[in-house]
Image (cartoon, rainbow, N blue to C red; front, side, top):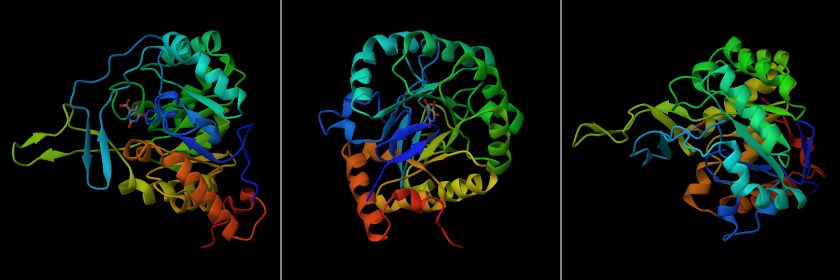
Length: 304
Ligand code: RRO
């Protein structure tokens, strides 16, 4: 079957993308497989200036999930480009779409991050605005949790770039925020980010992470994410990227049926580095089993 899709103006050879922060900058996975088999990759969020992130420990395995409080450790856009630009440019030439992610604590910092991408990162096909990081005290989820906060980030940066703007949504109030983002000029939505949770070591009675409240990702949140993608699909006309606990091709297929055009593999990359290409071939087998010639016939084809 034809696995190609168009998302926010980007023609992708297939719908399989990677979730920001779970995939480094792609090159880390080259020892395991040819990354150019994927439709797109999304790189770790970068701010205009470097950020150190939160104190350790900041990741733990919990039931059917991972919990993280990384806190957006990153080297800044310019160093990101110096270190990875050559690799990512070559990957783009092979037809894998490159989505970079902009972050900030304030509207001004989001603007600075996008402006640095404009200056130093010509190879990116789209910019994802992360308005939903659960692990930074300002910015992130603090802005993405309301319609006006999320839309305000899009409005602040919209005139600074001609590239498609994708918004990484917080797992709250999906329909209303999706409509506000559409009105503000977003080109696509990716959802969901991790869900705030806690993990306590009952023997020591201490938090398992240095920061007690942190983002839960993985199979435990998958069906919550499927429901949220369906809510966004009904609420707006923007193309959607479904994210949340995709471990198999059938998990990805659920997002497609709920209305997603792209699907991102996240936690699974950390469980087994070969997950993304396996999920792609399983998804392709599912599309073939449905008797359609193109995966696009299955987007939103869920029946109540
Ligand atoms: O770096 C992080 O702590 C982080 C981010 Br920015 C995010 O968007 N989601 C997440 O689970 N962790």
